[in-house]
Image (cartoon, rainbow, N blue to C red; front, side, top):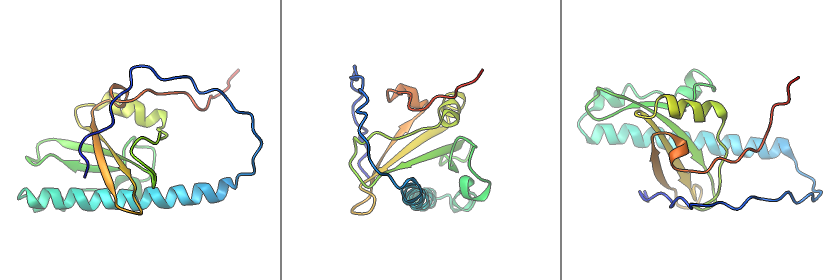
Length: 158
């Protein structure tokens, strides 16, 4: 674990569109990203169970839930865990990459809103360099207090 998250840079330069044509196999990219995400979620799930067991709470470790796998996506988090006292749930969202610590990541509107509504219990686990030597840091609370959010997609309505 590398417990220190990246520093938040005060100003972020606007990224200009490049308008370059390229051939992208979206299906293959989605398959690889889904596989990476699932493996990283399993990694964090095991770490959470180990953390609670090491803190003398194997009862809570047995209750940790891989929510996105057991109940499906759309909850706003991937894993439901607990603090070591067992009196507060923790909602963990896992974002993984095989690249470095500073690589931007995507977050859904649902995940952003959930992190605001449940900021006391929300934790984003940023797992990086996953296939070589997994490292991670944790961003507690609302996502927006840690990162700059830049729009990537828009819903067009009449």
